[in-house]
Image (cartoon, helix red, strand yellow):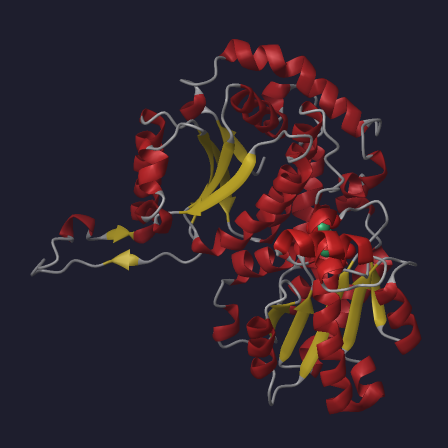
Length: 445
Ligand code: PA5
């Protein structure tokens, strides 16, 4: 077993009888998922993906990554939402958020097309000056405005620098197998393409080429990632709640929701987990937040945020619970030396590993928060590596799907995301949105 759910700190808030009472509902939700009978059942490709992935494409991903490593100093990964967050989360967690600043044999990786900020785009363009550049453009629909806009800019840059043919060998597109503007463009220009299968939704796509190609370019062992996910798939298929931490986690967060908790804070004591928090927030926010239901997924990174959000968590409105992701072993520890003068008064920490100090901060915080009325679930993860990343991804994906079914929502669609797009298109004068434009402009004036 890899990821382990510790329920000790939720015992004062949820009784054993409540878990027993919800078990039949959780099992029904699990069955709905595994029998493929629930809402959104045409988006369940991620369930068996860790075993049933396209091995030929997987080999092509590795070959493309090796070519990108040889051909460029900078890889620009263009994508948004599910076509962005997983790759960045993996990079920061498994390599460090300072990946680009450290000496290494692999290319720098910048993420573009995840906003419409000209400043952000200009910064990345500046970072590409004088560098050999490759691009991985990722869009399942192939029509999303943010990445399409960024890709227009980078395509032009590459064509200017390397000519049409040169650009062609530096652009890699990850998109639908047949549909969308990006697929059409890629076929016309002859870019190498990777497929996001029809039955894998954006936020469940990190274990496809969407996440795997950027990971492989950074030197992340994608075989180990898939192995971790495959082991999770097997271990988390068990039906009984007491033997399946994924089901138990879904059950507990649903019980807490029914008891009035509105916000789940994902907590980590590793700054490298910051983008994993963002990935988690998209996964749970887009999956559960519909029909006026769902926990609001939020996050903090401790101890950093204990100096900003700690006061609220300890004494603010009691609408939260926390899920703490606790890594049991530090990647590279730091030894605190003794200082004979002890002018800073820190000798009580002398001869101590910093990971122990971090752990004690975590334990102290969990106890303080639970005493303050905030239930804490803890997910113990042995260490930060590819295997555990794959396991954690699968754990969260499956728990999310079951949570959605427990709420009686479709965890695989995102109809609400369209609303802002329609308004943005209307206000920008996209053909076909004329009536809406007039309506919105009247409201704005
Ligand atoms: O989860 C989702 O489906 C969305 O967040 C998408 O990933 C996001 O909108 C980007 O879409 P696309 O990959 O089609 O450009």
